[in-house]
Length: 499
Image (tube, rainbow, N blue to C red; front, side, top):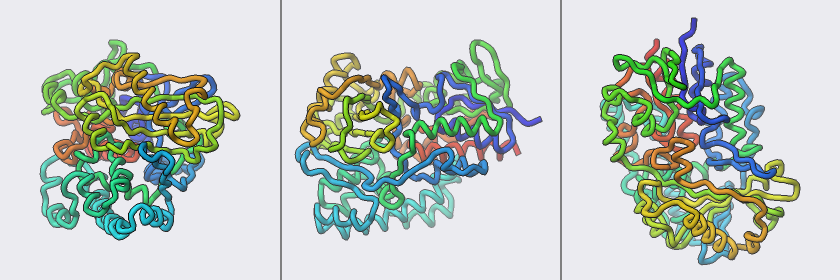
């Protein structure tokens, strides 16, 4: 009889872990407190409009396809994708009538860079060469493997390879070695926000994110990102897996520092192994209750760790198609980006803010009523614990007004407020309550140097056998492609330990 694995949470990494283990011959059951799969990769349906709730940008599509191909499936039958070109449009609030399109075509991208600052063309290609070396080093030596002990990182092989990769300082400083134009530095640097850290404080390691886009592109999944979550659930069930929705896990059952099941509705459900996709800080404080099983991650340590930013999201059902807005992904930068980032991570209410507008219905009209568009708007903001202000109706109205007033200056959005027929919002306290995101941090633990690689929580529990963790607060970090990697690391560790 095959051994039983319980996976806590049907988020992206939980679903990927469950599929991998079910495919490997285990009997796998997922317990999920919500009624739908996906975690933050969920869907909001409102008056005929459908919105992706959280993630919206597809990078590294081969990692999305990998879990389907592992099971012998043709990925396009589950997640049909198309490559975007241009990938996105950038607006600056001090020059809203001068948008910049970022092309997936290297020739066009080079022309765009040259038009902004001719001297930066050479710097761009030098940056691409240098950061690509860092990327290949990371893929081979960091992102795809665990760091369970010091010798996993402090060894002769790593010592020989690491000096060739000159990733020193912050992401902004690293990009500034190659790029002079402040506009271009912002276009390159802001992308560390995809994992919840400021480019002005985040390690230079993460300046590889724009390079990944420039080389491999940005993609769109028909039906939006929720298609991925629904498709993974479908695949898991096809290969024999079971999902229990509306089943909030109260505790991970641990006896003598060994996990042997979970507690749901005050009832113990036994298992040989437990894989936890709940946010690691939340899980260590609330699901792992035996002090000895927490290892070094005591409640005090969890409280003292640094957390990523959160997000204020607006979902707007509009009364028309936005034909004058040409692209699915649109970024609106305030020229005072550094001040914006500093205020986010210092907890101040934002006076200078940048944000993002996603119009999925431009590529898939089925996501909105005929002749209409839905607008998804995301503004990075402070996490709940950091913010020196409360989230109430006044705060929501303040940010809503800021966003709409900024958009009115951009061609195509001039009458945005009058075009709204239905709307709702999602705030940091809701990230905390709905997804058990600690402090409402949308991307989990902040990927600082002291919380990355071997210093980040790993896939294997530090103080308990047969317990494994996956998701954005564990190594290798946040972002959909990266948490898919975390699922592989966790399941490989479980299978290896079992064997």
